[in-house]
Length: 220
Image (tube, rainbow, N blue to C red; front, side, top):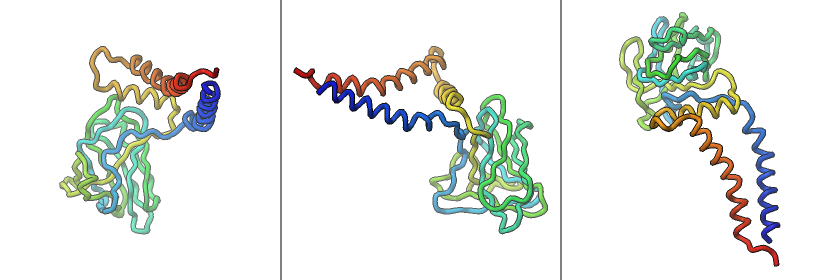
């Protein structure tokens, strides 16, 4: 009984590893944060006129090459040229060419050398206005405050950051460890967290097998 139960569990684990393994090793886009989530039910459009900017203050920005994601409404016409910038970090300024349509747009940019909390601005560089997708839902509103053309507005423009290109599993794991150790005692180091994570993974596989092995008496 013990041998057959252990064999079944081992086969199930191997089947799970064969199914999930390739997916775990597949490169994927990595979230760099969501200062303002997408609206759940109530969508609000914030118009930005040519030569003006919509800015969110108190935006947390991580390091590394990444992309800003936000929604636009062009009223059925080709969208104007836009720029995205972070206050105090000039290399982060990037542009989106004119001609896009309504929907989500992506603007890659170079992140700061260290994590910062700053102001993020989207500027209309074209000759026609564009509307940014946001919301006034209380359950979605967060820390950043919205200003358009220097004037505070009620509500917020939805904004998210993700990696500019798919990241390998090793990159994702290293970033997880770095984030876990961001606020830590002096004795907690990145290598210690990595060892603990490896022990958890190994234990999650070995513990069920050991439990089955000890749960059934040996065959007579």
